[in-house]
Length: 291
Ligand code: C5P
Image (cartoon, rainbow, N blue to C red; front, side, top):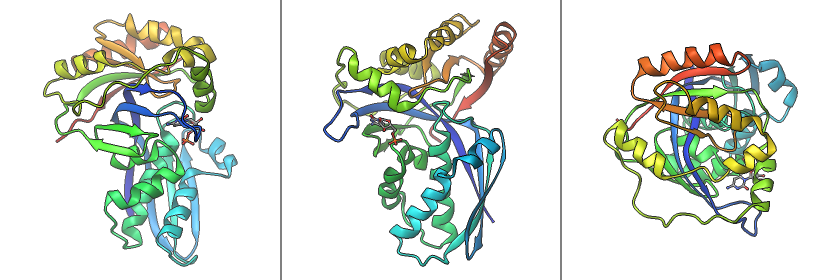
């Protein structure tokens, strides 16, 4: 059996430019991954099958068009494998759908990593990226699952060389904010420009990383708040949390994050926030750094 972790994705910055002719937006985003997420297990089989358990599994089952199966089929096609090249896949969900944490994208990426091994393809990541990009804009980033800069429409990935572990609290307010809707609202607002390409973001200490994150922004924030005004309340709550250093929106929302100086502070803040806002879920996490 091959097991793959599908971590939650967090955008610490997300710069977006005006919509391109193909309907996508050019992005420049600093992306990190939590020590919390879904798990995918794969065993060889002559059929492609998926079973699900965990948070929201019933809802996903009803979807039919699960990204895990789409990823498996896309890889099978790209590798020109016969239809009887299958796998029994089991996905244990923790990341809610539509949370802006790239749950589906991370599941698809974990599937590509698992089947790349199970089917003895052993392709390097660079060869898997076009397959990943076909499934969704965030899937190439999730394939790397390490601190990175993402550009293009999401398919250009540069791994950061030096980046520290960060202590954070994620707030999952359970508000469904469709990505396409947020981008459509973004298109009606003041146009924003991407920052000049510059050097890869780099930080040795958490303090340096905070400064890098604080110097950037999430260009989708205003649009996401216009689609779902309660996101503004979530950000205000996180910004006001004891010892919170910086708060922001992940992706197109609705999940928001706050950074802290220590794990203990993140835990204390998550407890205080949960007591004040029982309607939202708060999760203290560590955002992995480079080795
Ligand atoms: O690629 P994916 O299907 O995950 O993207 C979902 C939606 O997000 C797209 O249909 C598009 O509206 C928007 N999007 C975008 N620019 C990107 C990525 C996504 O406009 N770079």
